[in-house]
Image 1 (tube, rainbow, N blue to C red):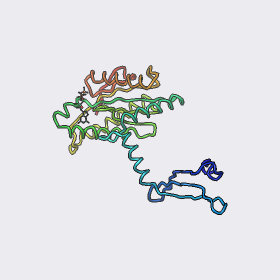
Image 2: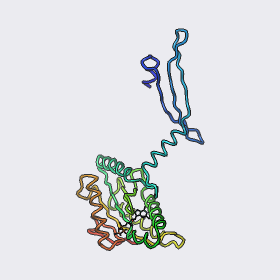
Image 3: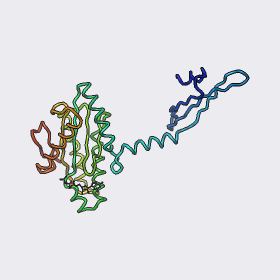
Image 4: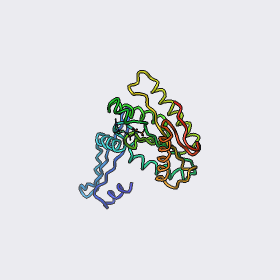
Amino acid sequence: MQGLREVIGLKRSVFYMEYPCHSETEHRWFIMRVSPFHYQQKLYLVVVHQNITQRKLAEFEVLKLSREDELTGVANRRCFDEFIQQEWNRCARLSMPLMVALIDIDKFKEINDHNGHQIGDACLIEFGRLLKTVANRPSDLCARFGGDEFVVVWGNTSEHQADLLVGRLMAGLAAVNGDAQSPTPTFTVSIGLASMQDDPVDSVAALLRLADERLYLAKRGGRNQVAARYLGCSRELRQ
Ligand SMILES: Nc1nc2c(ncn2[C@@H]2O[C@H](COP(=O)(O)OP(=O)(O)OP(=O)(O)O)[C@@H](O)[C@H]2O)c(=O)[nH]1
């Protein structure tokens, strides 16, 4: 605690430190303020602890909101851009694979037009929820790119593992589509998959570009498809 030493040595007039002090039942933060006080030629220190929990919680909420898509609760584009670059760097350093999936809901304009915007929103929310179920690890993140387009990055994940995750995602979508109580109409998605390790890419931008090209292939191939290197072209998604 250099700052505290400096106050004791009279090199500075005040020292502040914020610190967590959680109890069994609640999160709490405090700020400690230390300043010198001279009395009858002796040096004393005045130490004040103030509870700043409300301010801290408000700061965390603002931070969360700035990184989250308001409608679906998944990460937003800004958060994703930061995360994927860090994960790319980490996987490159440790020679680990990394996969990215760009996913677009098929004919979403028709869903909106036929059922109304609220139901369209419900599809986006439901799909965001499904995506979270296949992006659980600290090295994974799903995000909304905008409109009806989503993206997932899977760190330390091979093409084979990504294929299994896509299968799980499709099983989840099939369950939603098959649920008579679901407020959402049946919908399908198209997916473009790209691999940091197995595809000829040298940057995050190139990886996302390739995933986007493959997403386009999947759309052109008839939608409800996944396109990836290991598939040669694209394959119909089984739901
Ligand atoms: N309900 C709702 N609709 C949105 C939102 N953001 C974008 N959209 C709509 O999403 C639709 C996307 O349509 P397109 O980009 O034409 O794509 P598409 O109809 O899915 O067609 P394909 O991608 O080719 O299968 C547009 O009609 C947008 O207005 C949103 O937050 N909520």
